[in-house]
Length: 201
Image 1 (cartoon, rainbow, N blue to C red):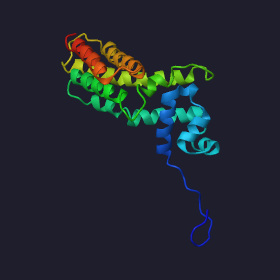
Image 2: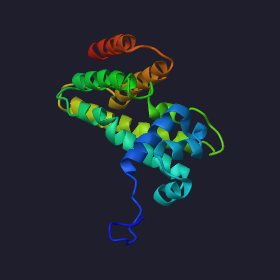
Image 3: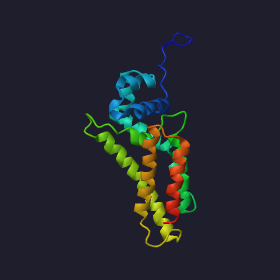
Image 4: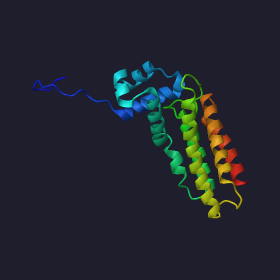
C-alpha cells in the first residue's frame, strides 16, 4: 500500500469490536464446536494469520466474544440490578431477557446457552466457561436479593441464592424455547407467571 507520495504505508487495521460482533453471531448460530475457523474468518473479514495475531486461538476468540456479548447484549442484566425492589429487579430482567432472546437482528436464543450445547474436542471447556459466566450473573443477582432481605424488601428467611437461581433458570429455559421458535408473546406470558410466583412467594 502506498500513499500519494509513493511511500509505503501500514496496512489498514480491522475493527476488533466489529470483528467480535461478527464472531458472536457465528458462535451463537453454530456453537463453539460447530463454528469452523473458515466460517469465523469469513464472517470477520480477516484471514487466519490476522485472527491468530489478534486473538491467539479459537478458544481465546470465543472468550473475547462471550465477554463482549456480556458487556453489550446483556447490559440489561446489570441495569436490572439497579431497580429499587427485588420484584422490580426480577421483572426488569425477565422482560428484557425475553426481548433480547427474540431480537429480529440477532439469532434466537442466547449465546451463553447455545454456544456450549454441543460438547466435542475441547473436553467441555467451552461449556464450562459458559456455565461459569452464567453463574457470575446468578451470584450478582443473589447478592442483590440478599440486600433486599437486609433492607426488609424481601421477607426474613428468603434464600437469596435459591431465588436468583429460579430467576436464572426461567431465563435459561426461555433461551432454549426461543431457539426452538417460541414467539415473544408466549415467552412474555411465561415470564409473567414466574413473576407472579415471585411476588406471592
